[in-house]
Length: 264
Ligand code: PGA
Image (cartoon, rainbow, N blue to C red; front, side):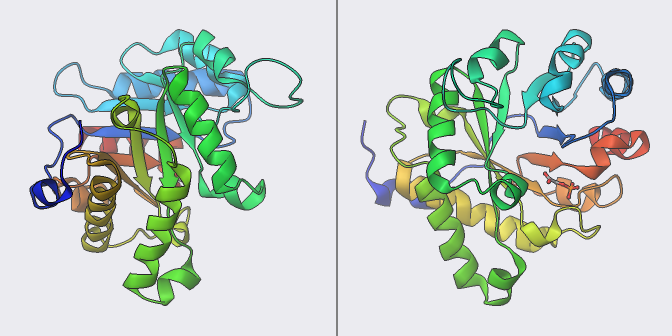
Protein backbone atom coordinates (compact mmCIF):
# COMPACT_ATOMS: atom_id res chain seq x y z
CA UNK A 1 0.00 0.00 0.00
CA UNK A 2 2.74 2.43 -0.89
CA UNK A 3 1.53 5.89 -1.74
CA UNK A 4 3.94 8.09 -3.67
CA UNK A 5 5.15 10.99 -1.56
CA UNK A 6 4.38 13.61 -4.20
CA UNK A 7 0.71 12.77 -4.23
CA UNK A 8 0.23 13.22 -0.53
CA UNK A 9 2.39 15.99 0.90
CA UNK A 10 0.25 18.77 -0.47
CA UNK A 11 -2.96 17.17 0.69
CA UNK A 12 -2.52 17.02 4.44
CA UNK A 13 -5.92 17.03 6.06
CA UNK A 14 -6.83 18.16 9.54
CA UNK A 15 -8.41 15.24 11.37
CA UNK A 16 -12.17 15.29 11.66
CA UNK A 17 -12.03 13.61 15.02
CA UNK A 18 -13.03 15.28 18.26
CA UNK A 19 -10.37 17.20 20.11
CA UNK A 20 -8.45 15.00 22.51
CA UNK A 21 -7.70 16.42 25.95
CA UNK A 22 -5.18 14.45 27.99
CA UNK A 23 -4.83 15.27 31.65
CA UNK A 24 -1.35 14.34 32.84
CA UNK A 25 -1.46 14.38 36.61
CA UNK A 26 2.26 13.62 36.80
CA UNK A 27 3.13 12.66 40.39
CA UNK A 28 -0.08 14.11 41.87
CA UNK A 29 -2.10 14.05 44.06
CA UNK A 30 -0.89 12.88 47.49
CA UNK A 31 -3.28 10.02 48.11
CA UNK A 32 -6.02 7.83 46.66
CA UNK A 33 -8.85 9.80 48.26
CA UNK A 34 -7.70 13.00 46.54
CA UNK A 35 -7.25 11.15 43.24
CA UNK A 36 -10.78 9.79 43.42
CA UNK A 37 -12.16 13.24 44.23
CA UNK A 38 -10.28 14.82 41.36
CA UNK A 39 -11.46 12.16 38.90
CA UNK A 40 -15.06 12.70 40.03
CA UNK A 41 -14.74 16.42 39.38
CA UNK A 42 -13.33 15.82 35.90
CA UNK A 43 -16.21 13.45 35.12
CA UNK A 44 -18.66 16.12 36.28
CA UNK A 45 -17.07 18.64 33.96
CA UNK A 46 -17.52 16.52 30.84
CA UNK A 47 -20.80 17.45 29.16
CA UNK A 48 -23.09 14.71 27.87
CA UNK A 49 -23.21 16.21 24.39
CA UNK A 50 -20.43 17.53 22.14
CA UNK A 51 -17.77 16.66 24.65
CA UNK A 52 -14.14 16.37 23.63
CA UNK A 53 -12.43 13.02 24.20
CA UNK A 54 -10.95 13.27 27.68
CA UNK A 55 -8.17 11.03 28.98
CA UNK A 56 -7.06 11.05 32.61
CA UNK A 57 -3.50 9.84 33.19
CA UNK A 58 -2.96 9.47 36.96
CA UNK A 59 0.15 8.00 38.59
CA UNK A 60 0.27 4.17 38.36
CA UNK A 61 -0.72 3.77 41.97
CA UNK A 62 -4.11 5.43 41.38
CA UNK A 63 -4.94 3.80 38.03
CA UNK A 64 -7.23 1.23 39.54
CA UNK A 65 -9.17 3.67 41.73
CA UNK A 66 -9.58 6.24 38.98
CA UNK A 67 -10.47 3.53 36.45
CA UNK A 68 -13.37 2.42 38.62
CA UNK A 69 -14.88 5.90 38.71
CA UNK A 70 -14.61 7.25 35.22
CA UNK A 71 -17.32 6.62 32.68
CA UNK A 72 -17.07 9.48 30.21
CA UNK A 73 -13.29 9.86 30.38
CA UNK A 74 -10.82 7.19 29.30
CA UNK A 75 -7.93 5.92 31.39
CA UNK A 76 -4.35 6.71 30.42
CA UNK A 77 -1.01 5.91 31.98
CA UNK A 78 2.13 8.03 32.07
CA UNK A 79 4.47 5.27 30.94
CA UNK A 80 4.63 1.53 30.28
CA UNK A 81 7.68 -0.69 30.30
CA UNK A 82 8.51 -2.65 27.16
CA UNK A 83 8.77 -6.03 28.88
CA UNK A 84 5.88 -8.25 29.85
CA UNK A 85 5.54 -9.29 33.50
CA UNK A 86 8.82 -10.67 34.86
CA UNK A 87 12.11 -9.66 36.38
CA UNK A 88 11.94 -5.89 35.89
CA UNK A 89 12.17 -4.39 39.37
CA UNK A 90 10.16 -1.24 39.78
CA UNK A 91 8.64 -1.31 36.30
CA UNK A 92 4.98 -1.55 35.31
CA UNK A 93 4.16 -3.60 32.26
CA UNK A 94 1.60 -2.84 29.57
CA UNK A 95 0.08 -6.18 30.49
CA UNK A 96 -0.77 -4.94 33.98
CA UNK A 97 -2.05 -1.67 32.58
CA UNK A 98 -4.31 -3.40 30.09
CA UNK A 99 -5.75 -5.38 32.94
CA UNK A 100 -6.72 -2.07 34.57
CA UNK A 101 -8.47 -0.95 31.36
CA UNK A 102 -5.84 1.58 30.39
CA UNK A 103 -6.43 2.72 26.79
CA UNK A 104 -3.74 5.34 26.28
CA UNK A 105 -0.13 5.48 27.31
CA UNK A 106 2.05 8.59 27.35
CA UNK A 107 5.56 7.73 26.18
CA UNK A 108 8.72 9.83 26.08
CA UNK A 109 7.58 12.73 28.23
CA UNK A 110 10.42 15.23 28.54
CA UNK A 111 10.45 14.84 32.33
CA UNK A 112 11.20 11.14 31.93
CA UNK A 113 13.82 11.86 29.30
CA UNK A 114 15.42 14.40 31.65
CA UNK A 115 15.13 12.88 35.13
CA UNK A 116 15.22 9.18 34.25
CA UNK A 117 17.55 9.28 31.30
CA UNK A 118 15.04 7.78 28.86
CA UNK A 119 16.63 7.51 25.47
CA UNK A 120 15.01 7.41 22.05
CA UNK A 121 15.91 3.71 21.86
CA UNK A 122 14.06 2.99 25.10
CA UNK A 123 11.11 5.05 23.94
CA UNK A 124 11.02 3.18 20.65
CA UNK A 125 10.90 -0.16 22.50
CA UNK A 126 8.12 1.08 24.77
CA UNK A 127 6.07 2.33 21.83
CA UNK A 128 6.39 -0.98 19.99
CA UNK A 129 5.40 -2.99 23.04
CA UNK A 130 2.44 -0.73 23.86
CA UNK A 131 1.14 -0.83 20.28
CA UNK A 132 1.50 -4.59 20.16
CA UNK A 133 -0.62 -4.75 23.29
CA UNK A 134 -3.33 -2.68 21.61
CA UNK A 135 -2.76 0.53 23.57
CA UNK A 136 -2.87 3.94 21.96
CA UNK A 137 0.41 5.79 22.32
CA UNK A 138 0.85 9.48 22.98
CA UNK A 139 4.45 10.21 22.05
CA UNK A 140 5.86 13.46 23.46
CA UNK A 141 8.43 15.40 21.47
CA UNK A 142 9.74 18.91 21.95
CA UNK A 143 12.83 21.05 22.05
CA UNK A 144 14.55 22.74 24.97
CA UNK A 145 15.27 26.45 25.17
CA UNK A 146 18.82 26.29 23.89
CA UNK A 147 17.65 24.52 20.73
CA UNK A 148 14.79 26.97 20.34
CA UNK A 149 17.20 29.88 20.54
CA UNK A 150 19.14 28.47 17.59
CA UNK A 151 16.18 29.09 15.29
CA UNK A 152 13.39 27.32 13.47
CA UNK A 153 15.52 25.09 11.27
CA UNK A 154 17.40 23.69 14.30
CA UNK A 155 14.11 23.04 16.08
CA UNK A 156 12.69 21.27 13.04
CA UNK A 157 15.80 19.11 12.64
CA UNK A 158 15.63 18.17 16.30
CA UNK A 159 11.94 17.24 16.21
CA UNK A 160 12.42 15.29 12.99
CA UNK A 161 15.26 13.35 14.56
CA UNK A 162 13.15 12.54 17.66
CA UNK A 163 10.27 11.35 15.48
CA UNK A 164 12.46 9.18 13.27
CA UNK A 165 14.26 7.54 16.21
CA UNK A 166 11.22 7.10 18.45
CA UNK A 167 9.03 5.70 15.67
CA UNK A 168 11.75 3.68 13.97
CA UNK A 169 10.54 0.42 12.48
CA UNK A 170 6.83 1.19 12.80
CA UNK A 171 4.69 0.60 9.79
CA UNK A 172 1.55 2.21 8.50
CA UNK A 173 0.80 -0.96 6.57
CA UNK A 174 0.43 -2.90 9.81
CA UNK A 175 -1.92 -0.17 11.05
CA UNK A 176 0.45 0.74 13.87
CA UNK A 177 0.64 4.43 13.08
CA UNK A 178 -3.10 4.96 13.40
CA UNK A 179 -2.67 4.32 17.12
CA UNK A 180 0.13 6.83 17.54
CA UNK A 181 -0.70 10.37 18.61
CA UNK A 182 2.05 12.96 18.87
CA UNK A 183 2.15 15.62 21.57
CA UNK A 184 4.30 18.58 20.65
CA UNK A 185 5.54 19.96 23.96
CA UNK A 186 8.27 22.60 23.83
CA UNK A 187 10.14 21.85 27.05
CA UNK A 188 10.62 25.50 27.94
CA UNK A 189 6.82 25.95 28.01
CA UNK A 190 6.10 22.99 30.29
CA UNK A 191 5.08 24.07 33.78
CA UNK A 192 6.39 27.52 32.94
CA UNK A 193 3.14 29.42 33.23
CA UNK A 194 3.57 30.73 29.70
CA UNK A 195 2.75 28.69 26.63
CA UNK A 196 4.19 28.84 23.14
CA UNK A 197 2.30 31.25 20.89
CA UNK A 198 -0.57 29.48 19.13
CA UNK A 199 0.91 30.54 15.77
CA UNK A 200 4.31 28.99 16.51
CA UNK A 201 2.68 25.88 17.94
CA UNK A 202 0.59 25.51 14.78
CA UNK A 203 3.69 25.91 12.61
CA UNK A 204 5.43 23.09 14.47
CA UNK A 205 2.34 20.90 14.42
CA UNK A 206 2.09 21.36 10.66
CA UNK A 207 5.77 20.47 10.39
CA UNK A 208 5.22 17.30 12.45
CA UNK A 209 2.27 16.27 10.28
CA UNK A 210 4.33 16.85 7.16
CA UNK A 211 7.24 14.88 8.58
CA UNK A 212 5.01 11.96 9.50
CA UNK A 213 3.56 12.14 6.03
CA UNK A 214 6.97 11.95 4.43
CA UNK A 215 8.14 9.06 6.62
CA UNK A 216 4.94 7.06 6.90
CA UNK A 217 2.65 8.51 4.21
CA UNK A 218 0.05 9.39 6.83
CA UNK A 219 -2.44 12.02 5.76
CA UNK A 220 -4.10 12.83 9.01
CA UNK A 221 -1.97 12.11 12.03
CA UNK A 222 -3.25 13.49 15.31
CA UNK A 223 -0.96 16.03 16.91
CA UNK A 224 -1.63 17.67 20.28
CA UNK A 225 -0.04 20.71 21.84
CA UNK A 226 1.21 20.71 25.43
CA UNK A 227 2.94 23.32 27.59
CA UNK A 228 1.18 25.60 30.09
CA UNK A 229 -2.28 25.26 28.62
CA UNK A 230 -4.83 26.65 31.05
CA UNK A 231 -8.42 27.75 31.29
CA UNK A 232 -7.57 31.18 29.92
CA UNK A 233 -5.19 30.61 27.01
CA UNK A 234 -7.08 27.57 25.68
CA UNK A 235 -9.36 29.88 23.69
CA UNK A 236 -6.38 31.16 21.69
CA UNK A 237 -5.42 27.62 20.67
CA UNK A 238 -8.77 25.93 20.21
CA UNK A 239 -9.62 27.89 17.09
CA UNK A 240 -6.82 26.22 15.10
CA UNK A 241 -8.05 23.14 13.30
CA UNK A 242 -4.47 21.88 12.96
CA UNK A 243 -4.26 21.34 16.73
CA UNK A 244 -6.02 18.06 17.45
CA UNK A 245 -6.03 18.45 21.19
CA UNK A 246 -4.00 19.23 24.28
CA UNK A 247 -1.77 17.56 26.84
CA UNK A 248 -2.36 19.37 30.09
CA UNK A 249 -0.30 19.16 33.28
CA UNK A 250 -0.75 21.74 36.05
CA UNK A 251 -4.18 22.92 34.95
CA UNK A 252 -5.49 19.34 35.07
CA UNK A 253 -5.27 19.49 38.86
CA UNK A 254 -7.39 22.62 39.28
CA UNK A 255 -11.12 22.32 38.86
CA UNK A 256 -11.70 25.84 37.56
CA UNK A 257 -8.97 25.38 34.94
CA UNK A 258 -9.88 21.93 33.64
CA UNK A 259 -13.54 22.80 33.60
CA UNK A 260 -12.82 25.75 31.27
CA UNK A 261 -10.54 23.62 29.11
CA UNK A 262 -13.17 20.91 28.65
CA UNK A 263 -15.93 23.43 27.98
CA UNK A 264 -13.78 25.39 25.50
P1 PGA B 1 1.93 21.81 31.92
O1 PGA B 1 2.47 20.34 31.61
O2 PGA B 1 0.55 21.89 31.34
O3 PGA B 1 1.97 21.93 33.39
O4 PGA B 1 2.86 22.74 31.25
C1 PGA B 1 2.26 19.74 30.38
C2 PGA B 1 2.96 18.42 30.33
O5 PGA B 1 4.04 18.28 30.92
O6 PGA B 1 2.47 17.47 29.73
